[in-house]
Length: 317
Length: 317
Image (tube, rainbow over the protein chains, first blue to last red):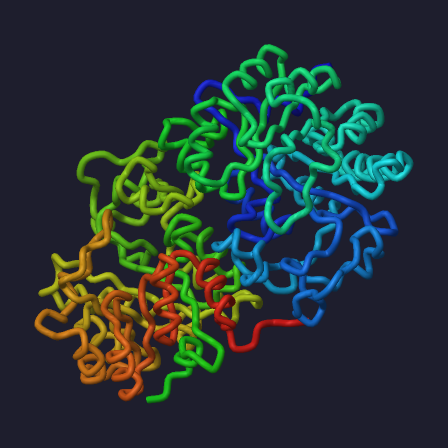
């Protein structure tokens, strides 16, 4: 199957693509409308985001399954304490008062993003809010790498998985942005559902080798990622065998050899999440298709220093 | 004289103020509407900016007197070459095609801001464009630290200086934001004109001791700053003697002793431009009134780590 969505994520002569991770997490709070708007305004036309659903089935843009004290304040502006609830245990109305406009600067997670702006009164957005934005004339070129988060507690529950995928797909179709959306997950069973239920959208196969450290302060995705027992070099073949055309390896796992194998298999390779200049430069040197980053301006700077760009035809007067 | 503008720049218990330098130069191109909008959206309510005038008297927001190859592209998107013209030698229509939406990543100036986003089709704004923005309901709390750039070639030309000050003041008054504007300059003769021509706006006295290195890639202001022969400790007294209530020292020049003297004299002390975490932390420790920075999110993070904020009453649900 030829997917029209793929060209936007594919490298071209002089071009390596740039994906804004959760908007632009290094600059503004992740998975917020403000963050997505900033990324788009900065010339980022590929947006990565995470979705899950509330108890009443509203698809919302957020990463962790539980509301996380380092990044969520209650309606009075106080950091959450103790063991806050799961997003999936709350109705959308119950979720709405929480404020995700900034990080607790004293938390381990907050220390990871020392330049992130601090906002007030910022809500966990519904997916539909972002999709509505994308319908605006100036955002017609924006594509989504839409990550569907599988709950590790529900891995055996195929009905729950199916319901989530159907809810997400229904919203994307209702907004008529399916031709600009790639469905992205660590959970390859969920991706199989996506391929079956939404054959018009490519599936993006995330991988992270188990030996990597988890990212501090956020949910690990390893529990749902079926790569145990594979070598890093085998990953492209496993993606192809699952019917994938789109591979998203962790940036520390990719090598020139595995990238070459991915190319032989016709896979697009989008690495996540390269933030340090040395790591970004290594990805540029390897020649991946796209770099997913929390620091879009930094990737733009390094691409330009190498005489490269992130768009095939930058708008010029 | 009691100026209503001063409270917004004055420290309070638990509060050190945050001034976005040229918008948020570390994040988006300096002195652009996009940069100012980003800063305001990030909760920055004090904006520093630079103005000069075109040959036909249009007040525009830009720092260097000459169009600068490291930060200006021509209408075709190519970096300027050779010795580009002065802004004051061009009419506004001649200036308008130039694009200031990003830095040449290979230039010494571009290397100083490796996270700055790269935009296309971004014009040097008129001052009036920013002032119009400030009239919007949500920006009523925003104050300006409006730097008027003196041309070192025209220091002996008091008529030229007077014309520039009058043009700036007329625009501020026309937009009715004079009660949210502080007039800021390294040129104390120009500030004397401001005090005379616009007695309703406080003058902000910039200082930089001559022994400091110039900032790479941008016009030096030392030629117009009359501090030669003073010691750093004498600066607050000199500001007070010039009728000033507002002192803006270079961050490397200020000490606990000079800050204490400024406080004795009743001066507000706003330091420029602290960007490195260690420098920002030292300013927080000193307890200045406000920190002018290219990285507002970074200052927010460090203030919060110290249990401080940049606004007296953060909006809370």
